[in-house]
Length: 261
Image (cartoon, rainbow, N blue to C red; front, side):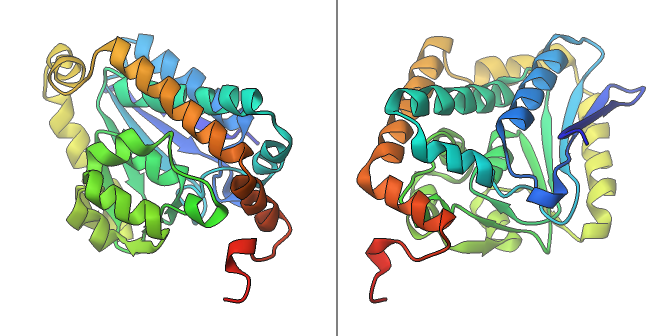
C-alpha cells in the first residue's frame, strides 16, 4: 500500500492523501521521501495550481512513526542531525511551495501532524478534530516545526502548547489561528472546494509572489533556521532526558521524571 496517494483534477487542484491509516498516518522515512518527491514534482508542474493535503483513516497524523522513533534511540548526534535536517527540509519545502496549500483536518493531529497544518497556507478542520504538541511528554521538543507554529499561532501560544503537551479542540485551534475554518466533518469537502474555487480565480504568479516575497524570508535566513532547528533537536534526542523519554515510551512505562506521580 502506498504511503502517499496523489491525484490532480482538470482544473489543476492536486490532492495529496497520507495513506497509513493503520499507523494513524505517522511519518516514517519512506513516507517522507514520497511526500518530498511529490512536493518537488508539484513545484515544477505548471498545471498544478492548488495543493490540498488530506489523510485517510480516522486520524490526520500522529507525527513520528514508532519504528522511526526506535531507530532514533540508537542514533549518534550526527545521525540525529541528518535525520532532523531531512525532516526540516521537507517542512521548509512544503511551506515555500509557490502554490497555495490547504490542510483538511478531519481527525487528531499530533506532534509533527500539527506542524503539517501550520506549514500549509490555509487550514480547515472538522469540529471533531483535536490537536496536541506531544513531544515534551517524551523529553523532546517540537524544534523542526516551531517556525511554522510561531507563524500560525504566535510565539506565546506556541510556547504554551509546546510546554504543556495538552490536547486542544478544533474550536481552540481556530481561536488561536491554527485553522481558519471550523466545519462539520460532512462539510469539509464542500468548504475545501469553495476555497479552491476562490484560489483558482486568482493569478498564479501573483499568489506565488505573495508567498515568496510578501510573507517569506530570504533563502539564506530560512536555510540557517532549518540547520539550527535540526541541531537543536539532535542535541535533545541524544541527551539523557531525551533517551529516557524515548525508552520509556517504547517500553510503555512512565519516564523517570514522573516517578512517584
